[in-house]
Length: 211
Image (cartoon, rainbow, N blue to C red; front, side, top):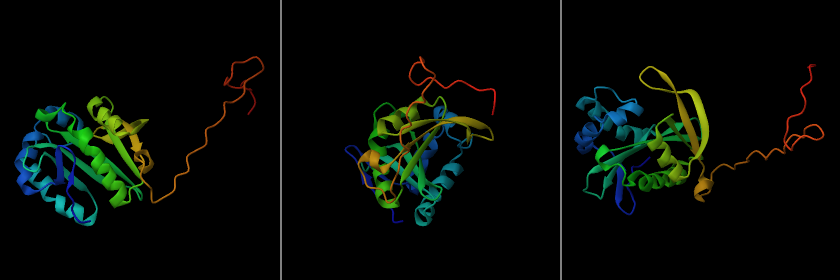
């Protein structure tokens, strides 16, 4: 996949490059990021160098697509967004915001541009979002972007050799009024199960002692 630069009203999104290393290293010292994202702790400069260095290969072989989100072409790094394949037809998105730039709506502004690109150019037909239960900031961004929260996955994330429960949600091309390369047939709504006479609508039927 050829690299691409995306723009929004305030932001420029482009693949991470070596010149971003110092800002990535500084951002990932943040305990709030380390709490939820399984980056090495302590986070050394060599970790940032390795992270940035693998970006061109990820774009080339389709294994991961990482974007630096900047406030204008020459402005500071305010966030990072990554997209990785998940199975044969889905992708998963992850993101973090630089601590000094939180609360300004940068991720809700940047993320839709990445999602539209993924649906249109990667052929993604289902985008997955996951975050540890309690990561309210990540969930707020996902919901503002249109993700449907589907529930809790028990032991759904590994975080520093510990399995943790996580929230999960999804976004489909149709949620953004975009076409999909695969048709989607949603399950029909099931009618309520009738209960015994005199029971409120939707009451379960009586339980028999016989199987």
